[in-house]
Amino acid sequence: MSLPFPWNDHAGRFAPVKAATLVLLCAPAAWTAFDFVADNLGARPINQAIREIGHWAVRFLLVALAITPARQIFRWTVLASLRRMIGVSVFCYIAAHLVLFTAQEMWAIVHVATEIVLRLYLTIGFTALIGLAALAATSTDGAVRRMGGKAWQRLHRTVYVIALLGLIHYFLQSKLDVYQPTLMAGLFLWLMAWRTLDWAGLRPGRAPVLWTFVLGIGAGALTLVCEAAYFSLFMHVDLMLIVEAALTFDSGVRPGWYVLAIGMAVFLAAAARAPFARPVKARARAA
Image (cartoon, rainbow, N blue to C red):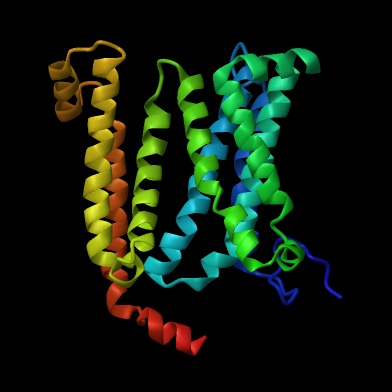
C-alpha cells in the first residue's frame, strides 16, 4: 500500500505537477527562514517575517480560489487535484503567522489572547484562522464521506467569507501602506465576480473569452475607483491629485492597473486556448 504522500495522486503514483506545486508552496517559507537566519530581515526580523508569511498566506488563498475559474476557462482538469494542497498550505502559513506573532510577544499567551480580543484586526484575523482550521481538518476524503457531500460543500463554501475576513485583516493591519491589500482585494473582486456570474446561471465557464474580457476591465476599473475613494474619503487627499497619480504613474503603477493587466493576461490566454478546448459537455461525457 502506497503512503499518502502529498506529491502522489489518488492511485499512489508520483505526480510531477503536485510535486512541483508542493515545492512552490514551501519556497516562500523556506526563503523567509533563510533570510531570518542570514539576518536579512532588517532591524525587526520577527516582525518582518510575520509580514512576509502573512503576504504569502493571502496570495496562496487567492490562488486556491482561482483554481475553479482556471480549470473551467483553460479546461485543465489536473488543477482540481491541487486545490486541497494549496488550501492546507494557506492554513499552515496563517498558523505560522500566529506563531511568529506569539514569538514576537515573548510567548506571553495570555497577552496574545488579550490582544486578539481587544484589537479588531486581530479578532478578524483569528476568526479567519479558526475557519481555515476547520476547512483543513475536513479536507480529507474520509471527512467528505463522514459529513456527506452536501454538508461538506456547505462548510467549504465558507472559504469565501474567510477570504474576505483575511483581506479585511490584511487591510487594517497595513495601516497607511495599503498597496498590497488593495491589489489582493482587486483580484478577489475578479474571482468573486466570476463566481457570481456562475451562480446566477450565466455560466462564465462556457464562454470564457467574453467573460474574462469583461471581468478584467470591470475589476481593474473598480479597483482604481475604490482606491481613489479610500484616499479621498479617509485620507482626505484631493481627488484630482489621486486621478492624476493614477493616470500619469507619478507615484508608480497603481494596484488597479495590475488587476487590469492580470485580467487581460487571462483574457489573452483564454482566447489563445479557446480554439483547442473541447466543449464542457463533451468533456463531461468523455470523463
